[in-house]
Length: 465
Image (cartoon, rainbow, N blue to C red; front, side, top):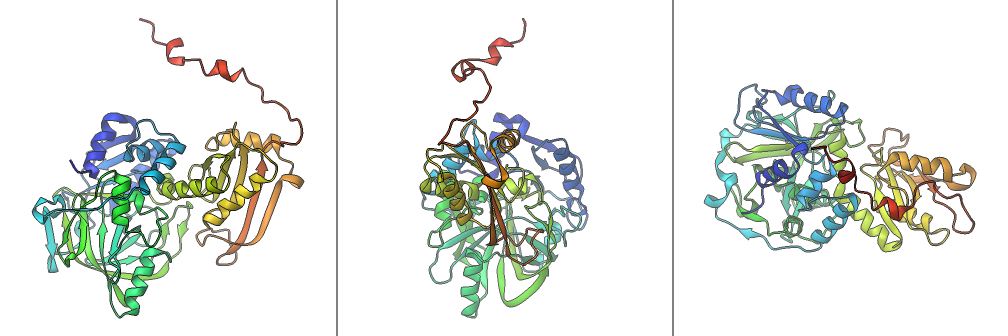
């Protein structure tokens, strides 16, 4: 059986029951009713993926289509998408990078074999307001999709897979934001040649397919093949309704919008709740015209809970890429934490320090990978970088500010950082909370580690029969 979102949901429900919940409570996502439920769960530190089985469409009518939120909100869910049984942060990062580097060819199936073709709307039938598209945060400019956008370069034929926010404008138009990366490059090349860029907007699929959209894949790689690698099997694709074999679309998807990013046109899009936890600004963005919709009859929209934990954890592939590249420079790095570091612009690096100075080289290597990183905290390998209590203990007991804190002025920042005064120029910070190697240092107070490792609490505190 080919991998699909439903395949993953059945696995997560069976193997990680606390990570998934479904509700038959009727909600109207475009009126914040789904995201309000997610907010209440997050305030209680609960992050299950929630399937809303009775969601009304934008017009307020009942629909057979459904909405899934918090798909990417925890490490177990992300790890399960990569076929890991009891994943740790390091295992997830290493697994993603290994699978990404093992691309697989696509498998082309006929339209009548593609589940995403159960429902087909074309021409005047296209109406995005018949879908349960959520408004998530109070300042959102409208109902928002957080889908994967597929595009094929009009000259090279390579496919790109990217995660882009799309705001509903009317029944067949969207405003799309493109960072100046691969999709933007494809569009600009097409527009320069006087062409619009055909795209397929995938609203739901196996989470591993979505993760590829967040990865730092190289521009010369075909990301359909990379998706096959990350999914562990060749991606099933089928001809699109609008362009046939000129634009192949994922056959196992839940819902697909076919259309084009229109040349020589722009539109207003935003605000939108971003990974920083703040509302990103309203922007002059690009216009999408939707020409066809294909779907399963009860198709599921994957809606990222913008501005919240899921939004940040969806960046795990970027963290994996940074981890691999920093380790290539400093092999003594044993773990990093970015998405679960307590702040969206913080990076915590744990390393088994051998010599003085290598920890700062690790920090600089991390800065060079992404402008998402503003602060780097360096800790020893006895500290879990994802455990903020341990990290702050290291900062409290291993740092002297005049010696161990470095400020980097005039560094490129992240445009979504609300603390910037300039549009892009800001500053970086390095806190070296590692123990010195050139002198004796206080020893951490704890029982002998070899004895601690032998303790099995399940045996000691097993239920009395």
